[in-house]
Image (cartoon, rainbow, N blue to C red):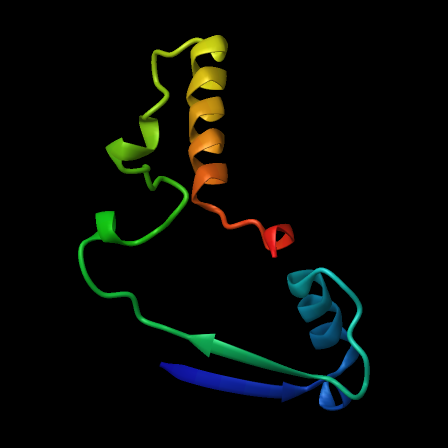
Amino acid sequence: METIVRHVRDMNTTQRSALEQLVGHNLRENQQLVIQVMTLSGPAEQRAGPDATLPDWCNVYEGLTDEQIAGVERVALQRADLARTSSSAA
């Protein structure tokens, strides 16, 4: 991994403008940018990217109607309440 540190006060107008576009806001003179460059390893399917897909367990609601999903949510919230201790019971 490579780490690059750039002080905003040392940048010319073109560099500063490009980096402000990258970070999405204006930079102040007393700031610095710390950029890390990393080499990804392993198969492409293990790396998150724009084409990454979610694992199958993320589709637990697939095929259910909105009403069925609401029912599952009611049960889950009910069970969550049963597991909580009441702080006003003292």
